Image 1: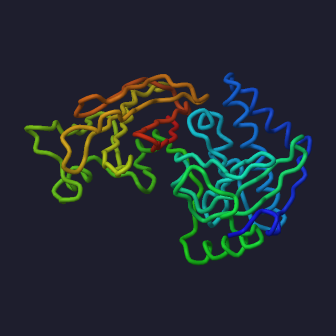
Image 2 (image 1 turned 90 degrees about the vertical axis):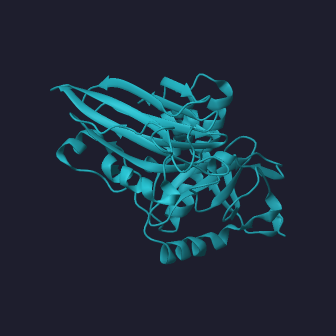
Length: 317
């Protein structure tokens, strides 16, 4: 095993502009602990971004979850989007730390984890090392791989893995012109899949299948959430009401052999600022549903969570 002093860390000066960016996010959150967490997360992302930029590796902080104030409230994330690779997590530790805390919320959808250590007055950030994956919330720093091996690791990911695409906001009104992004299926197609054993629904006598829409457009996808993974069917429908208003319907149903949604599964709708406007927790239900009206170009997010697992989908009407 390595000790941090045995490796060759990379030190980044933290500029006034870095702190100004972190303070901008900090001031958007009223909870002091959350605001402090976001401040440090922002600095760690900026430090790693500087390092990768120096190496000529293309990144996008704007497409990182950590740069979205709405997601900052929901998830303790310090991710950085790396082109052709995907998300890497930039976890902060303070001076004299021996372990790095990595929440279970970010154990998936990450291509690697870099540990960033700050000095006491937050004028420097040192990239101590990295790991490819995590299986514990308390990562000993002595288990880190040297940071100078990280560029080679990224190159191997870009070489052997399909090119990562930027996460996009799903524009629902495009569905009305039959412009549907990959990954979304028409309800009829999803219901045809019910005959497959891995995706089969309960018989209609025990479970009311979702209905086809007549005046709008409804699409969905199967999601796997929780530990162990539980499969659910996520549906969203858009229906024109007037030239300047649409009706949105969100539905969540059990899939596989389950007649009921998992207990404690939560479904929430958040506005563009990240404020929860609709929320429901399943107790013993065969489905959850929300309906609301919105205007063109209005944005919202849907959050589905079970245990420590959380999924967030962003939409624009």
